[in-house]
Image 1 (cartoon, rainbow, N blue to C red):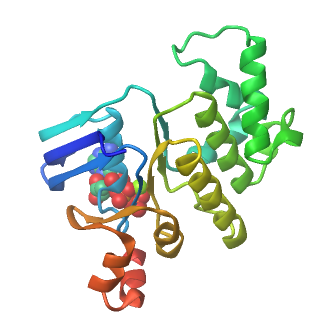
Image 2 (cartoon, rainbow, N blue to C red):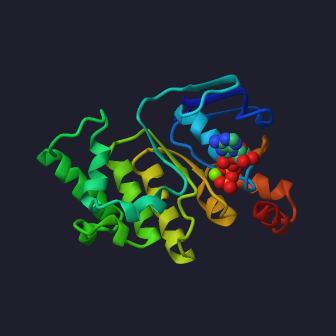
Length: 234
Ligand SMILES: Nc1ncnc2c1ncn2[C@@H]1O[C@H](COP(=O)(O)OP(=O)(O)OP(=O)(O)O)[C@@H](O)[C@H]1O
Ligand SMILES: [Mg+2]
């Protein structure tokens, strides 16, 4: 339980002249459920891109002790109207970890079916993804991640545009993946209460890491949650 899956040490990053991340250090144990909050432009998506290796640190280092990572980027759903694929085909992409297109085996089909069942979308299997609601599309991505059998699932604002009831269900689903399927989760979200109710560890990022620890300590340290909500609205 206590072995590390991720270590970030003295990380700095800039796209141009100005640093967007400064002196970030933390480590994450396996099976942790880690929530990152922070205002717009505070470097959250940048940090995730550094963790998955899309960007390289300007300085410092990131060590990651698994190669079974599944990453769901921010605003992924906005491209779907251009995309004729069905729900089953999108979920099936999670089986093509080597990037080579091939026919699905019976095992693939079984895993796809199970994942769709888990996220409650079995009956949508043959629907075009562009015809689903935003919240349903997010669950398609979770299903795609599940079939790739990750150790580490990284989600960037997955509940944007999802209503409160479905957000709660979504966090429950992530809680299940974390506790019962032993998947380590890193989630970026603006939804402080949703994050705080499910995660085992949380961070407040604004260029630097201003807080990292247990959710209850975050609320102890910051006496007025209303102020945080204001901060997050940026
Ligand atoms: N490709 C890029 N080139 C230059 N600057 C960028 C690029 N991507 C992001 N930035 C800048 O880096 C900073 C951090 O951006 P980032 O997307 O990490 O913020 P964020 O915390 O994810 O914000 P949000 O809550 O709006 O998603 C911002 O000032 C942003 O304008
Ligand atoms: Mg972002």
